[in-house]
Length: 498
Image (cartoon, rainbow, N blue to C red; front, top):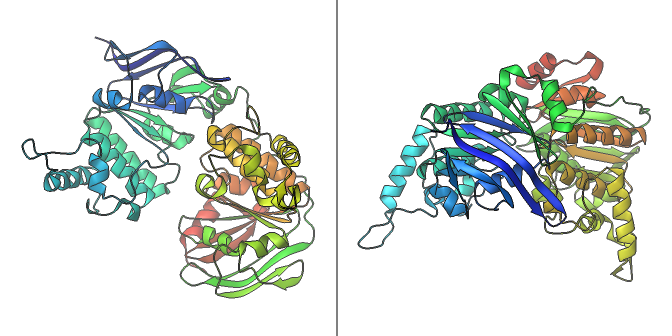
Protein backbone atom coordinates (compact mmCIF):
# COMPACT_ATOMS: atom_id res chain seq x y z
CA UNK A 1 0.00 0.00 0.00
CA UNK A 2 1.27 3.49 -0.86
CA UNK A 3 2.58 5.64 1.99
CA UNK A 4 0.86 8.59 0.31
CA UNK A 5 -2.86 9.26 0.62
CA UNK A 6 -2.61 11.60 -2.39
CA UNK A 7 0.00 11.68 -5.12
CA UNK A 8 0.16 13.77 -8.29
CA UNK A 9 2.67 12.80 -10.98
CA UNK A 10 3.76 14.98 -13.90
CA UNK A 11 0.57 17.07 -13.95
CA UNK A 12 0.34 19.58 -16.79
CA UNK A 13 -2.54 21.98 -17.45
CA UNK A 14 -2.60 24.49 -20.29
CA UNK A 15 -5.03 27.32 -21.00
CA UNK A 16 -4.96 29.41 -24.20
CA UNK A 17 -1.52 31.02 -24.24
CA UNK A 18 -0.63 29.96 -20.69
CA UNK A 19 0.84 26.81 -19.16
CA UNK A 20 -0.69 26.96 -15.67
CA UNK A 21 0.93 23.73 -14.43
CA UNK A 22 4.07 22.32 -16.02
CA UNK A 23 4.99 18.74 -15.10
CA UNK A 24 4.10 19.21 -11.42
CA UNK A 25 4.58 16.55 -8.72
CA UNK A 26 3.18 16.45 -5.19
CA UNK A 27 2.85 13.84 -2.43
CA UNK A 28 0.67 14.04 0.69
CA UNK A 29 1.16 11.55 3.53
CA UNK A 30 -1.75 10.24 5.57
CA UNK A 31 -2.38 12.46 8.61
CA UNK A 32 0.18 15.03 7.42
CA UNK A 33 -0.04 18.83 7.35
CA UNK A 34 1.89 19.72 4.19
CA UNK A 35 2.56 23.40 3.39
CA UNK A 36 2.46 24.55 -0.24
CA UNK A 37 4.18 27.85 -1.00
CA UNK A 38 4.95 29.94 -4.06
CA UNK A 39 4.45 33.38 -5.54
CA UNK A 40 1.05 34.47 -6.80
CA UNK A 41 0.82 32.99 -10.27
CA UNK A 42 3.01 29.98 -9.40
CA UNK A 43 0.18 27.55 -10.20
CA UNK A 44 -1.24 26.90 -6.72
CA UNK A 45 -4.84 27.83 -7.63
CA UNK A 46 -4.85 25.63 -10.73
CA UNK A 47 -3.32 22.86 -8.62
CA UNK A 48 -6.28 23.07 -6.19
CA UNK A 49 -8.76 23.05 -9.06
CA UNK A 50 -7.19 19.92 -10.57
CA UNK A 51 -7.43 18.07 -7.25
CA UNK A 52 -11.03 19.20 -6.69
CA UNK A 53 -12.15 18.32 -10.22
CA UNK A 54 -12.78 21.87 -11.46
CA UNK A 55 -10.11 21.37 -14.14
CA UNK A 56 -8.93 18.12 -15.71
CA UNK A 57 -5.18 17.90 -16.40
CA UNK A 58 -3.93 17.66 -19.97
CA UNK A 59 -1.44 15.03 -18.88
CA UNK A 60 -0.22 13.35 -15.71
CA UNK A 61 -1.70 10.99 -13.15
CA UNK A 62 -3.47 11.32 -9.78
CA UNK A 63 -3.34 8.53 -7.20
CA UNK A 64 -5.52 8.24 -4.09
CA UNK A 65 -4.26 5.72 -1.51
CA UNK A 66 -2.10 4.21 -4.25
CA UNK A 67 -4.98 3.77 -6.70
CA UNK A 68 -5.12 5.81 -9.91
CA UNK A 69 -8.22 8.04 -10.04
CA UNK A 70 -9.87 10.27 -12.61
CA UNK A 71 -11.47 13.27 -10.89
CA UNK A 72 -14.03 14.40 -13.47
CA UNK A 73 -15.81 17.15 -11.49
CA UNK A 74 -16.20 18.61 -7.96
CA UNK A 75 -18.83 15.99 -7.04
CA UNK A 76 -16.30 13.30 -7.90
CA UNK A 77 -13.77 14.99 -5.66
CA UNK A 78 -16.27 15.20 -2.78
CA UNK A 79 -17.14 11.50 -3.11
CA UNK A 80 -13.43 10.67 -2.94
CA UNK A 81 -13.16 12.53 0.38
CA UNK A 82 -11.51 15.75 -0.80
CA UNK A 83 -12.65 19.22 0.32
CA UNK A 84 -11.24 22.73 -0.22
CA UNK A 85 -11.51 25.83 1.96
CA UNK A 86 -10.73 29.04 0.12
CA UNK A 87 -9.31 32.39 1.25
CA UNK A 88 -12.46 34.18 0.07
CA UNK A 89 -15.47 32.39 1.54
CA UNK A 90 -17.61 30.55 -1.00
CA UNK A 91 -20.65 30.62 1.27
CA UNK A 92 -24.27 31.63 0.74
CA UNK A 93 -24.50 34.78 2.92
CA UNK A 94 -28.30 34.92 3.16
CA UNK A 95 -28.68 31.29 4.26
CA UNK A 96 -28.13 29.87 7.75
CA UNK A 97 -24.94 28.25 8.99
CA UNK A 98 -26.69 24.85 8.91
CA UNK A 99 -27.79 25.34 5.29
CA UNK A 100 -24.23 26.28 4.32
CA UNK A 101 -22.75 23.24 6.07
CA UNK A 102 -25.14 20.77 4.41
CA UNK A 103 -25.52 22.48 1.03
CA UNK A 104 -25.51 19.74 -1.63
CA UNK A 105 -25.75 16.84 0.84
CA UNK A 106 -28.83 17.65 2.92
CA UNK A 107 -30.34 15.09 5.28
CA UNK A 108 -33.60 13.93 3.69
CA UNK A 109 -36.30 11.58 4.94
CA UNK A 110 -36.29 8.58 2.60
CA UNK A 111 -40.05 8.16 2.66
CA UNK A 112 -41.39 11.71 2.66
CA UNK A 113 -38.43 13.32 0.80
CA UNK A 114 -38.59 16.20 3.30
CA UNK A 115 -35.47 17.87 4.64
CA UNK A 116 -34.71 16.84 8.23
CA UNK A 117 -34.04 20.32 9.57
CA UNK A 118 -33.78 19.41 13.25
CA UNK A 119 -31.31 16.60 12.55
CA UNK A 120 -29.24 18.98 10.44
CA UNK A 121 -29.25 21.72 13.10
CA UNK A 122 -28.18 19.21 15.76
CA UNK A 123 -25.39 17.83 13.56
CA UNK A 124 -24.24 21.34 12.67
CA UNK A 125 -24.16 22.29 16.36
CA UNK A 126 -22.11 19.16 17.11
CA UNK A 127 -19.56 19.97 14.37
CA UNK A 128 -19.23 23.58 15.55
CA UNK A 129 -18.73 22.55 19.19
CA UNK A 130 -16.05 20.07 18.15
CA UNK A 131 -14.27 22.99 16.49
CA UNK A 132 -14.63 25.17 19.59
CA UNK A 133 -17.29 27.47 18.11
CA UNK A 134 -20.15 28.75 20.24
CA UNK A 135 -22.41 30.48 17.69
CA UNK A 136 -25.92 29.25 16.80
CA UNK A 137 -26.10 27.18 13.58
CA UNK A 138 -29.41 28.91 12.79
CA UNK A 139 -27.63 32.26 12.42
CA UNK A 140 -27.42 33.81 8.99
CA UNK A 141 -23.98 33.38 7.43
CA UNK A 142 -23.63 37.10 6.65
CA UNK A 143 -23.67 37.94 10.39
CA UNK A 144 -20.46 35.96 11.05
CA UNK A 145 -16.90 37.26 11.13
CA UNK A 146 -14.36 36.04 8.57
CA UNK A 147 -12.88 33.70 11.19
CA UNK A 148 -16.30 32.24 12.00
CA UNK A 149 -17.03 31.73 8.31
CA UNK A 150 -13.76 29.78 8.02
CA UNK A 151 -14.94 27.52 10.85
CA UNK A 152 -18.23 26.91 9.00
CA UNK A 153 -16.24 25.92 5.89
CA UNK A 154 -14.23 23.47 7.99
CA UNK A 155 -17.45 22.09 9.53
CA UNK A 156 -18.78 21.62 5.99
CA UNK A 157 -15.68 19.60 5.08
CA UNK A 158 -16.12 17.45 8.19
CA UNK A 159 -19.78 16.89 7.34
CA UNK A 160 -18.75 15.34 4.02
CA UNK A 161 -16.34 12.97 5.83
CA UNK A 162 -13.40 14.55 4.00
CA UNK A 163 -10.10 12.74 4.51
CA UNK A 164 -8.13 15.40 2.64
CA UNK A 165 -8.71 19.11 3.26
CA UNK A 166 -7.04 21.84 1.21
CA UNK A 167 -6.80 25.19 3.02
CA UNK A 168 -6.06 28.10 0.67
CA UNK A 169 -4.59 31.12 2.51
CA UNK A 170 -6.96 30.62 5.47
CA UNK A 171 -5.10 33.06 7.76
CA UNK A 172 -4.78 35.93 5.25
CA UNK A 173 -7.73 37.88 6.72
CA UNK A 174 -7.45 36.74 10.33
CA UNK A 175 -6.08 38.45 13.43
CA UNK A 176 -3.25 36.83 15.38
CA UNK A 177 -5.74 35.45 17.94
CA UNK A 178 -8.03 34.12 15.20
CA UNK A 179 -5.02 32.54 13.47
CA UNK A 180 -4.11 30.77 16.70
CA UNK A 181 -7.66 29.41 16.89
CA UNK A 182 -7.35 28.14 13.32
CA UNK A 183 -4.01 26.51 14.14
CA UNK A 184 -5.67 24.70 17.05
CA UNK A 185 -8.52 23.48 14.83
CA UNK A 186 -6.10 22.36 12.10
CA UNK A 187 -4.02 20.38 14.58
CA UNK A 188 -7.21 18.82 15.95
CA UNK A 189 -8.13 17.68 12.43
CA UNK A 190 -4.67 16.17 12.06
CA UNK A 191 -5.11 14.29 15.35
CA UNK A 192 -8.21 12.53 14.03
CA UNK A 193 -6.31 11.47 10.89
CA UNK A 194 -7.24 14.20 8.38
CA UNK A 195 -4.55 14.99 5.80
CA UNK A 196 -4.16 18.71 5.11
CA UNK A 197 -2.60 20.77 2.32
CA UNK A 198 -2.01 24.21 3.84
CA UNK A 199 -1.37 26.93 1.24
CA UNK A 200 0.11 30.11 2.69
CA UNK A 201 2.48 33.03 2.07
CA UNK A 202 3.25 33.26 5.77
CA UNK A 203 6.31 31.51 7.16
CA UNK A 204 4.75 31.53 10.64
CA UNK A 205 1.89 29.32 9.34
CA UNK A 206 4.36 26.83 7.92
CA UNK A 207 6.54 26.63 11.04
CA UNK A 208 3.55 26.44 13.36
CA UNK A 209 1.77 23.60 11.54
CA UNK A 210 3.59 21.79 8.76
CA UNK A 211 6.03 18.89 8.75
CA UNK A 212 6.98 19.34 5.10
CA UNK A 213 6.85 22.17 2.58
CA UNK A 214 6.63 22.09 -1.22
CA UNK A 215 7.42 25.08 -3.45
CA UNK A 216 6.02 25.86 -6.92
CA UNK A 217 7.52 28.54 -9.15
CA UNK A 218 6.38 29.66 -12.62
CA UNK A 219 3.93 26.71 -12.79
CA UNK A 220 6.70 24.19 -12.07
CA UNK A 221 7.51 21.95 -9.11
CA UNK A 222 10.73 23.19 -7.48
CA UNK A 223 11.16 20.86 -4.49
CA UNK A 224 9.96 19.44 -1.17
CA UNK A 225 11.76 19.83 2.15
CA UNK A 226 11.28 19.01 5.81
CA UNK A 227 10.28 22.26 7.52
CA UNK A 228 13.16 21.95 10.01
CA UNK A 229 15.66 21.38 7.20
CA UNK A 230 15.15 24.59 5.21
CA UNK A 231 15.71 28.29 5.98
CA UNK A 232 13.51 31.26 5.12
CA UNK A 233 16.16 32.49 2.69
CA UNK A 234 16.29 29.09 0.96
CA UNK A 235 12.49 29.11 0.55
CA UNK A 236 12.44 32.70 -0.75
CA UNK A 237 15.09 31.80 -3.31
CA UNK A 238 13.10 28.70 -4.32
CA UNK A 239 9.90 30.75 -4.69
CA UNK A 240 11.27 33.72 -6.66
CA UNK A 241 14.26 32.15 -8.40
CA UNK A 242 16.67 34.61 -6.84
CA UNK A 243 17.75 35.84 -3.44
CA UNK A 244 15.87 38.84 -2.08
CA UNK A 245 18.64 40.19 0.11
CA UNK A 246 16.91 43.51 0.64
CA UNK A 247 13.15 43.22 1.05
CA UNK A 248 12.80 46.95 1.68
CA UNK A 249 14.32 49.36 -0.85
CA UNK A 250 16.59 52.20 0.18
CA UNK A 251 14.59 55.41 0.50
CA UNK A 252 15.91 58.40 -1.42
CA UNK A 253 12.89 60.67 -0.94
CA UNK A 254 13.36 64.22 0.24
CA UNK A 255 10.76 64.95 2.91
CA UNK A 256 9.75 68.57 2.43
CA UNK A 257 6.75 70.80 3.12
CA UNK A 258 3.61 69.82 5.01
CA UNK A 259 0.85 68.89 2.58
CA UNK A 260 -1.89 67.43 4.80
CA UNK A 261 -2.82 68.15 8.40
CA UNK A 262 -5.47 66.46 10.54
CA UNK A 263 -6.66 68.11 13.75
CA UNK A 264 -8.82 66.35 16.35
CA UNK A 265 -10.77 64.33 13.78
CA UNK A 266 -13.50 62.18 15.33
CA UNK A 267 -16.19 59.78 14.19
CA UNK A 268 -18.40 58.45 16.95
CA UNK A 269 -17.83 54.77 17.66
CA UNK A 270 -14.78 54.51 15.38
CA UNK A 271 -12.03 57.02 16.21
CA UNK A 272 -11.49 60.06 18.42
CA UNK A 273 -9.30 63.19 18.41
CA UNK A 274 -6.94 62.04 15.67
CA UNK A 275 -4.22 64.60 14.90
CA UNK A 276 -1.16 64.28 12.67
CA UNK A 277 0.74 65.96 9.82
CA UNK A 278 1.90 64.51 6.50
CA UNK A 279 4.70 65.87 4.31
CA UNK A 280 5.63 65.54 0.64
CA UNK A 281 7.98 62.61 0.11
CA UNK A 282 7.04 61.05 3.45
CA UNK A 283 5.67 57.57 4.17
CA UNK A 284 3.58 57.77 7.34
CA UNK A 285 2.87 54.28 8.68
CA UNK A 286 -0.29 53.74 10.74
CA UNK A 287 -0.43 50.49 12.67
CA UNK A 288 -2.23 48.83 15.57
CA UNK A 289 -4.23 45.70 16.25
CA UNK A 290 -7.24 44.82 14.07
CA UNK A 291 -10.23 46.91 15.22
CA UNK A 292 -8.10 49.90 16.23
CA UNK A 293 -9.95 52.18 13.78
CA UNK A 294 -7.24 52.51 11.13
CA UNK A 295 -9.37 51.61 8.09
CA UNK A 296 -12.29 53.74 9.32
CA UNK A 297 -9.93 56.72 9.67
CA UNK A 298 -8.68 56.25 6.10
CA UNK A 299 -12.23 55.99 4.78
CA UNK A 300 -13.11 59.31 6.43
CA UNK A 301 -9.96 60.99 5.06
CA UNK A 302 -11.05 59.87 1.58
CA UNK A 303 -14.71 60.85 2.03
CA UNK A 304 -16.17 57.32 1.98
CA UNK A 305 -17.54 57.80 5.50
CA UNK A 306 -18.25 61.18 7.09
CA UNK A 307 -16.36 62.33 10.16
CA UNK A 308 -18.35 64.07 12.92
CA UNK A 309 -15.88 66.73 14.03
CA UNK A 310 -12.37 68.01 13.56
CA UNK A 311 -10.49 69.97 10.91
CA UNK A 312 -8.52 69.06 7.79
CA UNK A 313 -5.90 71.25 6.10
CA UNK A 314 -4.58 70.59 2.60
CA UNK A 315 -1.57 72.59 1.41
CA UNK A 316 -2.20 75.05 4.23
CA UNK A 317 -5.89 75.64 3.51
CA UNK A 318 -8.75 74.32 5.61
CA UNK A 319 -10.86 71.88 3.58
CA UNK A 320 -13.92 69.71 4.05
CA UNK A 321 -13.91 66.15 2.74
CA UNK A 322 -17.47 64.91 2.93
CA UNK A 323 -17.44 62.79 -0.23
CA UNK A 324 -14.99 60.89 -2.40
CA UNK A 325 -15.17 63.43 -5.23
CA UNK A 326 -13.93 66.16 -2.88
CA UNK A 327 -10.91 64.06 -1.86
CA UNK A 328 -10.05 63.21 -5.47
CA UNK A 329 -10.39 66.85 -6.52
CA UNK A 330 -7.83 67.82 -3.88
CA UNK A 331 -5.44 65.12 -5.10
CA UNK A 332 -6.00 62.33 -2.58
CA UNK A 333 -6.09 58.70 -3.74
CA UNK A 334 -7.05 55.57 -1.82
CA UNK A 335 -6.14 51.91 -2.22
CA UNK A 336 -8.68 49.87 -0.16
CA UNK A 337 -7.78 46.84 1.92
CA UNK A 338 -10.13 44.55 -0.04
CA UNK A 339 -8.89 44.97 -3.62
CA UNK A 340 -11.29 42.37 -5.06
CA UNK A 341 -14.47 43.87 -3.60
CA UNK A 342 -13.57 47.58 -3.52
CA UNK A 343 -10.60 48.15 -5.82
CA UNK A 344 -11.35 46.23 -9.01
CA UNK A 345 -14.13 45.14 -11.34
CA UNK A 346 -12.91 41.59 -11.77
CA UNK A 347 -14.84 40.84 -14.97
CA UNK A 348 -13.43 43.92 -16.73
CA UNK A 349 -10.24 44.13 -18.75
CA UNK A 350 -7.13 45.69 -17.19
CA UNK A 351 -7.22 48.82 -19.37
CA UNK A 352 -10.81 49.58 -18.33
CA UNK A 353 -9.99 49.06 -14.65
CA UNK A 354 -6.98 51.37 -14.86
CA UNK A 355 -8.81 54.16 -16.71
CA UNK A 356 -11.99 54.02 -14.63
CA UNK A 357 -11.17 56.97 -12.34
CA UNK A 358 -9.97 59.27 -15.13
CA UNK A 359 -12.50 58.91 -17.93
CA UNK A 360 -12.63 62.70 -18.28
CA UNK A 361 -9.01 62.66 -19.48
CA UNK A 362 -9.64 60.16 -22.27
CA UNK A 363 -13.12 61.30 -23.34
CA UNK A 364 -14.47 63.90 -25.71
CA UNK A 365 -18.16 64.72 -26.09
CA UNK A 366 -19.00 61.75 -23.81
CA UNK A 367 -17.12 59.29 -26.04
CA UNK A 368 -14.10 57.39 -24.71
CA UNK A 369 -11.01 57.58 -26.91
CA UNK A 370 -10.05 53.90 -26.86
CA UNK A 371 -6.61 54.62 -28.32
CA UNK A 372 -5.85 57.03 -25.45
CA UNK A 373 -7.26 54.59 -22.92
CA UNK A 374 -5.08 51.75 -24.21
CA UNK A 375 -1.97 53.94 -24.33
CA UNK A 376 -2.44 55.28 -20.80
CA UNK A 377 -3.22 51.85 -19.35
CA UNK A 378 -0.23 50.24 -21.07
CA UNK A 379 2.14 52.95 -19.82
CA UNK A 380 0.95 52.71 -16.21
CA UNK A 381 0.83 48.89 -16.19
CA UNK A 382 4.46 48.89 -17.35
CA UNK A 383 5.34 51.53 -14.75
CA UNK A 384 4.22 49.29 -11.87
CA UNK A 385 5.52 46.15 -13.62
CA UNK A 386 2.23 44.23 -14.01
CA UNK A 387 2.78 40.69 -15.27
CA UNK A 388 0.00 39.89 -17.75
CA UNK A 389 -0.25 38.68 -21.33
CA UNK A 390 -1.89 41.95 -22.35
CA UNK A 391 -3.89 44.85 -20.96
CA UNK A 392 -6.99 43.14 -22.35
CA UNK A 393 -6.73 40.34 -19.77
CA UNK A 394 -9.60 40.26 -17.27
CA UNK A 395 -8.62 41.43 -13.78
CA UNK A 396 -9.80 38.12 -12.28
CA UNK A 397 -7.21 36.27 -14.40
CA UNK A 398 -4.31 37.94 -12.59
CA UNK A 399 -2.53 36.81 -9.45
CA UNK A 400 -3.19 38.69 -6.20
CA UNK A 401 0.05 40.66 -6.41
CA UNK A 402 -0.64 41.79 -9.96
CA UNK A 403 -4.22 42.74 -9.06
CA UNK A 404 -2.75 44.96 -6.35
CA UNK A 405 -0.43 46.57 -8.88
CA UNK A 406 -3.40 47.31 -11.15
CA UNK A 407 -5.13 49.15 -8.29
CA UNK A 408 -1.95 51.20 -7.78
CA UNK A 409 -1.82 51.92 -11.53
CA UNK A 410 -5.43 53.12 -11.35
CA UNK A 411 -4.45 55.60 -8.64
CA UNK A 412 -1.70 57.02 -10.83
CA UNK A 413 -4.12 58.05 -13.58
CA UNK A 414 -5.18 60.96 -11.36
CA UNK A 415 -3.12 64.02 -10.43
CA UNK A 416 -2.47 62.95 -6.88
CA UNK A 417 -0.42 64.45 -4.08
CA UNK A 418 -1.48 62.14 -1.23
CA UNK A 419 -1.90 58.36 -1.55
CA UNK A 420 -3.56 56.29 1.19
CA UNK A 421 -2.63 52.60 1.05
CA UNK A 422 -4.64 50.32 3.35
CA UNK A 423 -2.77 47.00 3.85
CA UNK A 424 -1.10 47.25 0.41
CA UNK A 425 0.63 43.85 0.65
CA UNK A 426 -2.22 41.84 2.18
CA UNK A 427 -2.47 38.37 0.65
CA UNK A 428 0.44 38.78 -1.78
CA UNK A 429 3.63 36.74 -1.95
CA UNK A 430 7.14 37.75 -0.97
CA UNK A 431 8.18 38.70 -4.52
CA UNK A 432 5.10 40.89 -5.05
CA UNK A 433 5.64 42.51 -1.63
CA UNK A 434 9.16 43.50 -2.61
CA UNK A 435 7.86 44.96 -5.90
CA UNK A 436 5.10 46.96 -4.14
CA UNK A 437 7.61 48.36 -1.61
CA UNK A 438 9.79 49.49 -4.54
CA UNK A 439 6.80 51.23 -6.15
CA UNK A 440 6.04 53.00 -2.85
CA UNK A 441 9.64 54.17 -2.45
CA UNK A 442 9.69 55.44 -6.05
CA UNK A 443 6.42 57.35 -5.53
CA UNK A 444 7.77 58.96 -2.35
CA UNK A 445 10.95 59.95 -4.24
CA UNK A 446 8.71 61.67 -6.83
CA UNK A 447 7.19 63.79 -4.05
CA UNK A 448 4.00 61.87 -3.29
CA UNK A 449 2.96 61.86 0.38
CA UNK A 450 1.92 58.37 1.45
CA UNK A 451 -0.15 57.06 4.33
CA UNK A 452 0.42 53.31 4.71
CA UNK A 453 -1.81 51.26 7.00
CA UNK A 454 -0.26 47.92 7.92
CA UNK A 455 -0.58 45.16 10.52
CA UNK A 456 2.86 43.79 9.59
CA UNK A 457 5.45 45.29 11.93
CA UNK A 458 8.48 44.47 9.72
CA UNK A 459 7.00 46.51 6.85
CA UNK A 460 5.97 49.32 9.19
CA UNK A 461 9.59 49.54 10.37
CA UNK A 462 11.01 48.90 6.90
CA UNK A 463 8.91 51.44 4.97
CA UNK A 464 7.71 54.10 7.42
CA UNK A 465 9.48 57.40 8.04
CA UNK A 466 7.18 58.06 11.00
CA UNK A 467 4.87 55.64 12.79
CA UNK A 468 1.46 56.25 14.38
CA UNK A 469 0.14 53.49 16.64
CA UNK A 470 -3.64 53.27 17.20
CA UNK A 471 -5.70 51.51 19.84
CA UNK A 472 -9.47 51.71 20.36
CA UNK A 473 -9.78 54.57 17.87
CA UNK A 474 -7.05 56.74 19.40
CA UNK A 475 -3.40 57.41 18.65
CA UNK A 476 -1.44 56.03 21.59
CA UNK A 477 2.05 56.73 20.25
CA UNK A 478 3.81 58.68 17.50
CA UNK A 479 7.48 57.96 16.85
CA UNK A 480 10.20 58.38 14.25
CA UNK A 481 11.22 55.07 12.69
CA UNK A 482 14.73 55.49 14.14
CA UNK A 483 13.39 55.25 17.70
CA UNK A 484 10.84 52.50 16.96
CA UNK A 485 11.03 48.75 17.59
CA UNK A 486 8.56 45.87 17.39
CA UNK A 487 8.40 45.80 21.19
CA UNK A 488 7.60 49.53 21.44
CA UNK A 489 4.94 49.30 18.72
CA UNK A 490 3.26 46.29 20.32
CA UNK A 491 3.30 47.94 23.76
CA UNK A 492 1.64 51.07 22.32
CA UNK A 493 -0.93 48.94 20.44
CA UNK A 494 -1.96 47.18 23.62
CA UNK A 495 -2.06 50.02 26.14
CA UNK A 496 -4.38 52.94 26.73
CA UNK A 497 -3.42 56.40 25.57
CA UNK A 498 -1.02 57.98 28.04
